[in-house]
Length: 255
Image (cartoon, rainbow, N blue to C red):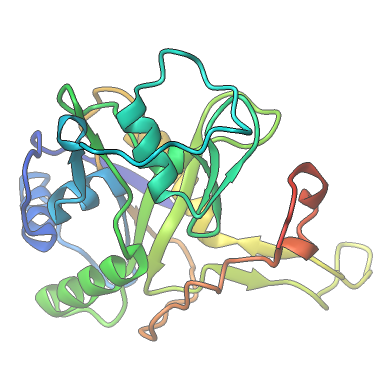
């Protein structure tokens, strides 16, 4: 497997994502090949789609529901309102640990970094739809049979410092490989093992994208043997029921 970071200009304002990706590929002298996978920062996707909020424009805010949260006094109320509005669920505690699109993520995925003052960027509204749309256009443009797209954002995992990548949407390949029933080295049948391909590739890409001023919002992943498909990927393919999650004891109301 080979991962190559693709540099980009500073993207500000609402633009067509397909056009921007073509420009990035051209400027990096890249022509997509059959069965390549293109990992794209969720931020560039959201900016192109216009899913950016000016906090100064949030007025007449409803009362914030903070009964179970011991937030710091420096938390900007406009940002707190936006986080609570975007969250599917909020876990009680000192920080805004939220569930968004069946993913545990801080602040509902809302990010202030690498954005002008007072502007924040949210996740794409429908990341799987965005990934599928871009995949279809790129397949047609480059006359390919198969192409993978991953929309990547960074998340934290329990008891580990630092951020890793997470696939908040993907298209063109199977995100989970089921190993149940296969044998290990000693001939024992695997009972529960599944391999999370989508998040693993997202983590590899996120390592190259970086978290600061790298200006590398796109990573080309080639020569990886994914199971490619042109079927629309279900948003539930990679999701686990809360009652079956091994971490269910760490959070309340796990359904």
